Image (tube, one colour):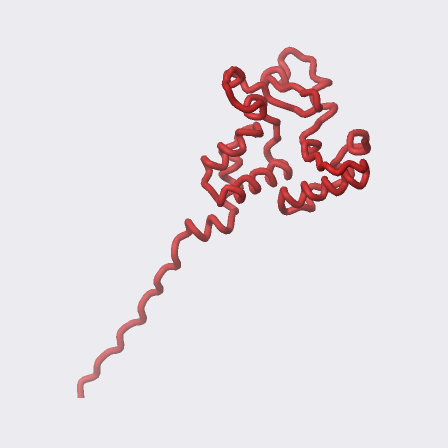
Length: 172
């Protein structure tokens, strides 16, 4: 597969896209074009072939955060205590998305708009079901401050202008 050998970031520039859905459509078209496969595989965005294989140090960040590569070569986080819960595997072992990346921005904005511009806590909850983003609350909060729709709804009304001065009465 061409995306595995040269990297998807060399085929598609993520910075060109304003929404996650447009990016997924382009990836689906690229996969179909290069592979002949009719199913888009958006999971290729989260893959990293070299990132975890070179880390063998006992004190490395990979060991501290309990990161691992699954069978599809996707970086996942070992969720800790939630492993024994009766829930989806994607919630037990979420995909790692680094903060301050364009792909993460697109995912956060997509989750926010798909859930009718819900607030900070609801957006974080939706994202946490599939992804693990370091410092997620702070990062989502900074992105939601830029949401024009939310600012229109929660913004202050225009201030009432000062009334003009009264005219003086002249006695005749």
